[in-house]
Image 1: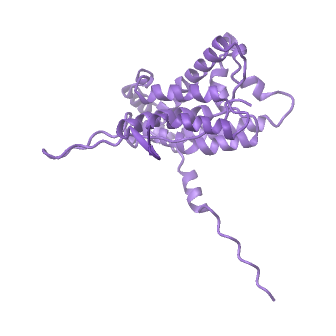
Image 2: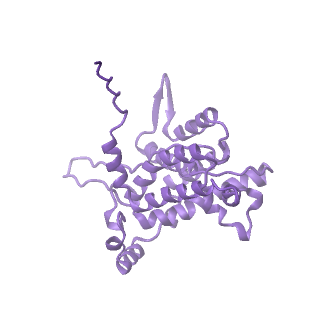
Image 3: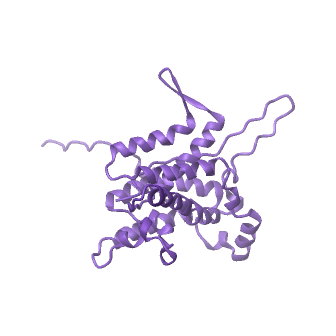
Length: 272
């Protein structure tokens, strides 16, 4: 009697994947849960979730300002949501670990959503006179790519491509073009706006929007967030500190070193 053929090994270690998922911080988990919830809502046919929450330039008004925050959580289908979630998870997880949960909430619900949206509306509606709706968490992925590229540029200004020296800060632009050519129905303009805001964040021009740590510590202590909320990352638990690793103290005569903080990512057309 012939023995059954052995199954081929999995391309990943399920144990490591489970460990990684179990250790995800609080805000990262909430983002993934909200993305999943909106996708499940899209399965019903009585109410169009995409039409309700998409970033549609002509639909933005006093009563629809919520669209500036809902569009990153809404996707145009299962694979759109899945690919964006896979790309975003390690990026937002690292961001939360480096900045803390409260800071991540304040930034991603605030300027890291509304500023790319505002820039997109300005270009799409005012300059181009179009009204293309966009959705998807790819906005955050390309934003973080832009921020990372600026930080990498400070320590490694260029990389070699054959005989050419390419500035490091341009790498998200290449990714933006590549995704637009490879994937149908992606918003090149939406991703470009996200990269631009990511550049501003990486350059430190948005530090004014970072919540003061003194206030964050007071809130955390008053509400005992670290004790009450599982997987919460407090201000004092951050991996590197708000603006990266501080220079190490070395004896006289030995040059100091500094390691910039970083995050990574990828994405798809903000629109369907």
